[in-house]
Length: 139
Image 1 (cartoon, rainbow, N blue to C red):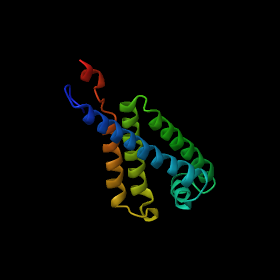
Image 2: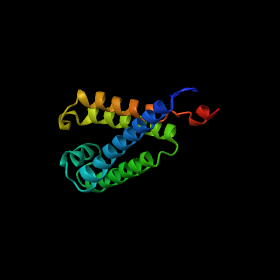
Image 3: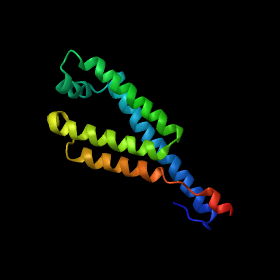
Image 4: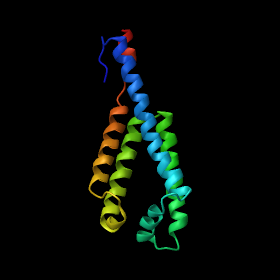
């Protein structure tokens, strides 16, 4: 968070970093939703869904999850309600990781690293949600 009295250059650096964080988070959710699930480029994702809901329901449910992930990407990119968005990201990733590790661990490429990578995404989402206090700088 940029404090009152911060140099304009610091504010600019924070803004650039925040936009980069927004872009990274949005791309991750978009790639997983559109590429991996809607377009079926990563069949493993449908296999994971099948573990929970069966082979018959997996194609439709995988696509619906993909749509939800695309909506998350749009929300992230909008930069609106960033704190609520960070909480939604955290809850979704923790739930997905927990369920996948419980029922589909053998289908995960990196079951040990996945939660660590997602913890990094959660931390980035919360960092991004911190206001820059631009109005404080003008005071």
